[in-house]
Amino acid sequence: MESVSHPGAPTGTQTGKDGTGHSGTIKYLDAKGKVLRVVTSAGKGLLLLGFLYMFICSLDILSSAFQLVGGKAAGDIFTEGSVLSNPLAGLVIGVLVTLLVQSSSTSSSIVVSMVSSGLLQVQMAVPVIMGTNIGTSVTNTLVAMTQAGDRNKFRRAFAGATVHDFFNWLSVLVFLPLEVASGYMYKLTKLLVDSFNIQGGEKTPELLHVITDPLTKAIIELDKSVISGIATGDPAARNKSLILKWCKTFTNVTLRNETVPGPENCTSPALCWCSQDLCYTLHNISETYNIQTCNHIFVNVDLSDLAIGLILLALSLLVLCSCLILIVKLLNSMLKGQVAMVIKKVLNTDFPFPFGWVTGYIAILVGAGMTFIVQSSSVFTSAITPLVGIGVISIERAYPLSLGANIGTTTTAILAAMAAPGDTLANALQIALIHFVFNVSGIILWYPIPFTRIPIRLAKALGDITAEYRWFAGVYIISCFFLLPLFVFGLSMAGWKVLVGVGVPIVALLIIVIVVNVLQARLPRCLPAVLHSWDFLPLWAHSLEPWDRVVAVVAAKCCCCCKCCQTGPEEEEEEEKGGGGHFLEMYDNPAMMNGVDWGEKREDKEDVLKATQL
Image 1 (cartoon, one colour):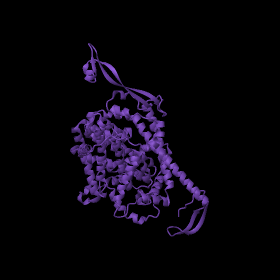
Image 2 (tube, rainbow, N blue to C red):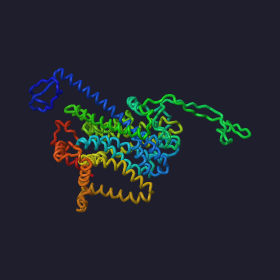
Image 3 (cartoon, rainbow, N blue to C red):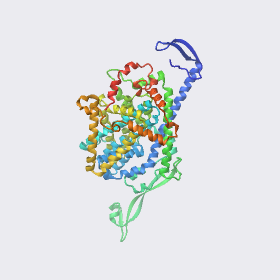
Image 4 (cartoon, rainbow, N blue to C red):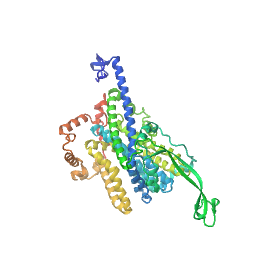
């Protein structure tokens, strides 16, 4: 039986039976030991809150760093209005811009600014909004990479992170063609905006920022109007720094007489006076006076935006990874034995029959509420990723939480749109509602019926692959978030003929491969004998083993002198033994499974394997 004593705490012993009916020696704590355990637990809880606070702040600084490094480039991308008329190009631009600024809220606000200024039509902005949904899901996938040291944790964490990716990608694959063909999201949101007499509201409430701003604003503050200015074609914004120098300004508007060349240059006929050679009119002249400088540490630093961005990028990544590792260590030390079992049971247990189906929808509401509080889907999904990794939250529960995060980030955008001026309120609100309708449509398609929860099965299959071949996680991130968008963007820029000529054969081949894989797993008798397996292809074409050997050789050559890269066969075998005692340990933390009937669990092995095959 597990000891409940704290190291160094006074203990006693008593002979008796534990909860399983086995005889043994039970250790108990005296008063001093109990006080010490309470103090230690409280200290760990405070440390956990502190590390979580630093983790959230580092994500905020990371977003600012990406904006300093690539913010102006993101603004330049949006200036190509003719490119955005292509739906696929607009989708890719939404993905790439969100990757550059690491914030779907920032990229969405740029789109709203362009729509409000008349540079971009609402229909053309729909694919861009879909792309921002994909781009924002890369953050928690990168967070999962920090748990690559342990195969089982990495399997769970990467699957829990990529379930969000698969939902976004699958939703785009279905709804982008549907929107291009029918425009149902545009028509539905247009009807909603026209049906309600919505007035502009107050500024969007900043809940979590009240806590994090004292630290983040002491490090860096950005003038986000610069990126929007570049996107909307303001020439003055191109030469301005993104680093905010003056935090308090005053704008004075005065009515002045001005000389103009002729009557056609007057503000109005009533305000125009002409003599023999000159005409005078009245103009409103705005003058901005700088009152107070900002207090962040980079306010007077003589460095370029790129240099400061790279410095903040390195430091924020260091703090983020360190905090995440420490959070996981603390959670592992706190969530053990009976405590872990209770927490896991509360988080992952469904309501009693016949209300079990309600549990997932409550999780969606919880995810939406928490995302509204922290005002960032990236922060919320990145926070639950390590909990999935250590087995506290199951992937089946993380999935509805991630879907709720998608809803929560759109409600914040809706409130922000309602704070827009009256002349731009309709377009801004329609863009925010399109984002909301897109995510709700995805949930309706991929969640209510258990059979349609394909993202869970795909994420588990990818988690198994990346746990065995950990280098494949990097290949997945680079391919799905960089190479594939750039490839599609290049084809779309080359014209529809090239896009159809190259893209259709590739898509057809992928569909054939998926169909054959499904038939191999479920109805092999429907296939000819040669297609019962992929063995007729070269090994490198249907297995990652040859590629794994290549990666191992390259890694050995690159770091042959580094001891951490010299993992011998004995260490690999020991690691496999430590992580593979039971089949379900792939997605369950062994420390939290005390008392589980593994004989009963092992009977489900075949069903789980079938569910993860495609």
